[in-house]
Image (cartoon, rainbow, N blue to C red; front, side, top):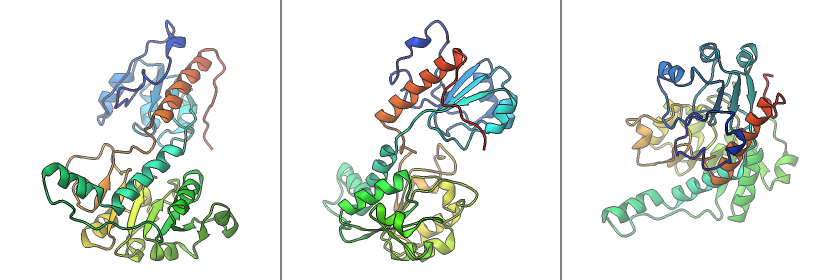
Length: 315
């Protein structure tokens, strides 16, 4: 099991059904060196990966000839080459997941930005000024949702509970679908960006959405607005985002996803004063971990019985 950062894998599932059948090895460190990764799992016939922390591309799969089963948490993992896995005779299985956890973290970021919690908490710890900022109200403000799927639709309902006006946009979203989730369809992406006080990204990363928010889009936002991205970093152009934060095109950003993870210690996103950043915690919750690792055990058990479940295939 790779990338078990918290040492949680064995604690959040009952692995006893595999006792005597599988030698379970947990790796907590993240391998940035491909050679070290290959050395660590070269003798493994089964590998469990946590989300997209370690990509399994065609080259890596070729270098692991003993691998027969690859289990990913969640039923979608863009960092696994499913076609290459099939060609190598590797079965790929997934697990269920909940959209509740990332939605809740998104609201934590929004609330943290609105009330300047990072600044005020740091001041409290360091003995600084007692109250140094004036927070924004959510009630009466506009929440712009880029994407209104499982997470976006939950965001819309919570936004309405806060008394926010909720507008949404995605390429194929209709007014009827938006209204059914308590949102209003924006006239365009630019219309949403220009009117929203908080813009939250809830789109799947694809060739169509990669770089969807670049310089022109970020400049279209209000200087007082905040951007929140708990989806995928590639949807927002990194260079444009850094310029927007440094030059004040927008007020700030709440970020849980990054182009390189773990984020390098010297990355400017770690130190910009108008960034509230978390280390990709969106899916990291007790419920998800129990589901992920519990169903990983089921996947392995079924595979050993010759009847794999929750199989993922290319296309």
